[in-house]
Length: 397
Image (cartoon, rainbow, N blue to C red; front, side, top):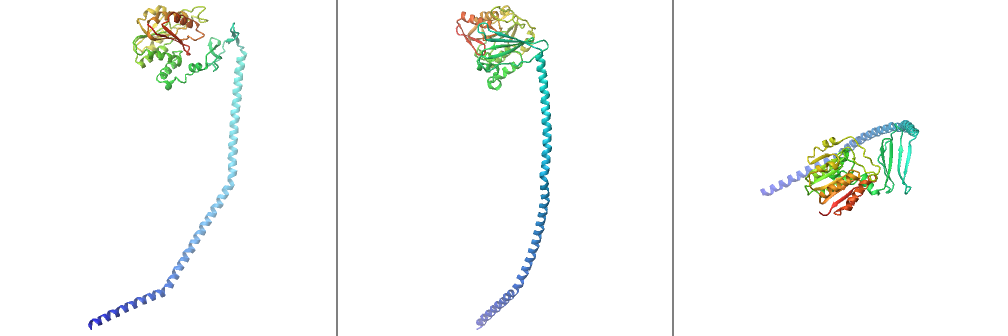
């Protein structure tokens, strides 16, 4: 009985709880329309303020567009002004340049007029047998000097090289193939890094102004030293001028590790004996003794022995009984032939003789002496190089 009453009370309490919850829900539902109306009002207020803010921003944008429109409207006129000023400046500059060119042209005309007024004498030289123009001389009056650069063309049979002595310009016709002209005159493939270390050594010697040999002829000497590097026999040079070729030989020996003395022989005052009828128009003109300058320039090379005097007189001072290489550059017949006859027999088998100017039309005596020597000494093989040098190789004892 007691249990039944407790159960009834529990159910009654649950019902009262549910009724209370339902009343709360009903009251909440009744208040919802008012709550929604407040939300709507707040939303409308916010939207109104947002619209006002956007209108203000649009008005500012319109104001800036109007300001920029006025600036853009004025811009084309400003550009035209700048262009006009720039054009005016360029016109003044062009006018100044043209005026300068006119002044320069007047100066050049004045110089040519002055030279023309001197009336230089032109003397053509014609070959008697063929009638071909062989030499042209231009004799200038005193006080007139025309600088002439090294000349020549690529035509194999039309190379004129200019020489100047006193007041005379002489253009000598030299027949050489174009590839030799490029090799001898420009040396594009032998200079500097193209053929190091030879290129650097040759560049330095040529730049010193102590040799007239260019890269191609120096390269012949370079190969001669290389071929003789195994030998300790001496190297003899007859005809050293200012000592540049001797210096080059010394540097080549240093590079290849070649030992032995290098004899540098010359009168250091010009050729002693010129043979008439053989050496052409060459003369035995003397110049200032430069032997002391040569000794000073070669002093850093302990293996170099400088000998001054006519080779026919000084030959006995060459103490070495054998030679590994011989370089002859004396330009004339007698000294060349004497040097070959005296020293070639002392050359080791396989040794090299290099004779300069063998192919030069201004040194006909050199070619004659070499040809006579080669004909009388079959143990030597003669090769005429396109450098203008002759190479004689001793092939037997």
